[in-house]
Image (cartoon, rainbow, N blue to C red; front, side, top):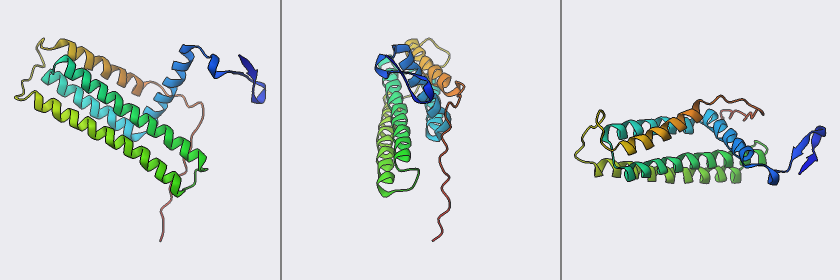
Length: 179
């Protein structure tokens, strides 16, 4: 269903959007976050380090699937945190407010919990493969290598995808507080 929106432009009813358009909007948001959020950039590098460790240690396919799933959870938590921060900033008029700050802290705390879980899984992966054997140039557990490589390529494709700012989001700089 189409309707005339502001400035006389045709606006598509979101409930009537085809699946492909919905996925495109989702990817636009993900690409925005991967380009603008420092924590997501850091998480990409941490997952890259994990992938290199998995290429060398060659865990079983179930272990690799668990680490890929946990990394997806970390990325998703960061994306939720970014969305919450943007919504809170807009709702508070870009001004500092104690409730807005607490909402952002709670969202950040959720990311921290997921990150600690991911660290526990990484520790389990390393401990369960002790003593370590480096299988980098072997055919050992190729399914796990393929899964990790595919996920790493996907993450880096999103990270390096060109970002075109349709809208410009300017967060005001926090000025130094003088007390």
